[in-house]
Length: 183
Image (cartoon, rainbow, N blue to C red):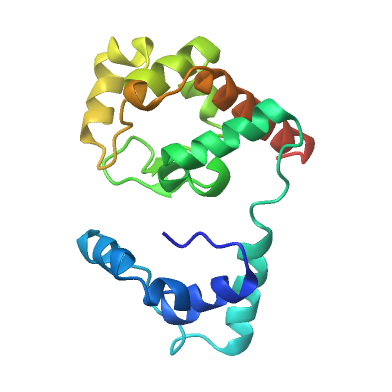
């Protein structure tokens, strides 16, 4: 994964495809070699200025973060559960999903989120079972969900008490940020 906390690490990921610390880690190399995707090195394809611009963008794209404890816990749990691997950093970016109805994995702050998740109860169904009851019983929705390259996994066995409430609080906070920005 490319997640980093410092501009120097972000620069290394973009330029070299790996940070110096990861490059020296045998366990990370093993994980990378077993994975389907690798971060490419763009150092020979991009100018220093282009890399500086990307570092600046990546450094701020996760801002702002929730100050309230429950949404903050939800963001931390989403990160720990791997939600951002599919829904994008902080749940904010729609990643490609060939075969899906719209061709992407919906972001939690996207305009189509309310069509997919009507309320907290439906969010819990998606989170626990990988599908909502409404979509499970809709032949057309189920068809497209089964055609998607990436499918929502059931997280029930990975959830800790209070996780769904915390995750939902984070999603609500995130959506409130989007509506405040006029998007």
